[in-house]
Length: 241
Image 1 (cartoon, rainbow, N blue to C red):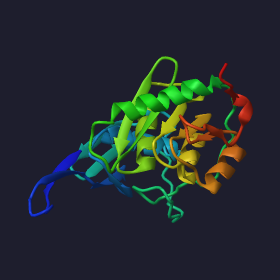
Image 2: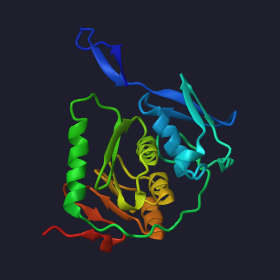
Image 3: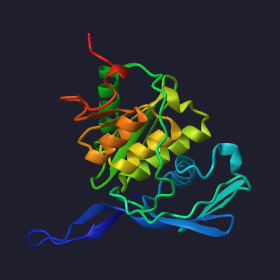
Image 4: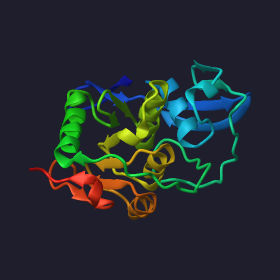
């Protein structure tokens, strides 16, 4: 995850830790699908989450095999729906493909207190507070389970937690996502694609992310833990007592 780099500071030559960034080429049934720039952790979960959130697979059982070998990931799946990239360059860091620009509507079945979301954000921040900087983190929370990850890319984190949810047969309609980074349109779209009804950022959001959240009926929350601005679908979030 980290690499020590020698540097010069005040005539001294200390080492600093910087996050590792590596290309990961994803091959589906022998055909190159995309290349993503990722942190070398939870790579299988990233691949699974990416395929699922883009609608290329519909279930974990669709995958017959998945193998990570250095900078390459090979996936075999007879049920996969291979889609050509539409060439959209997204604002999230990591990769730049968008296979499906249509956004489904999420059924708002989850009601949750704003404090639960704030507490989840605090837990995420505490989890990685003693590590070197330069990376983002995100968490997927349900009543039974939670998955916390980090990556150089904000939307890579979303793919990773979605992949973990897929592997663990999580009902995404009963989950919410928290992210330390800004929520961009592609991140919110991934949530909509898999049916996650609530997404929260410790920081901010883009205007297009708000539009997508409105269209898909996702509750979007920013500045979580301090001001807790609820931007869309207000009725799903209960006020603190």
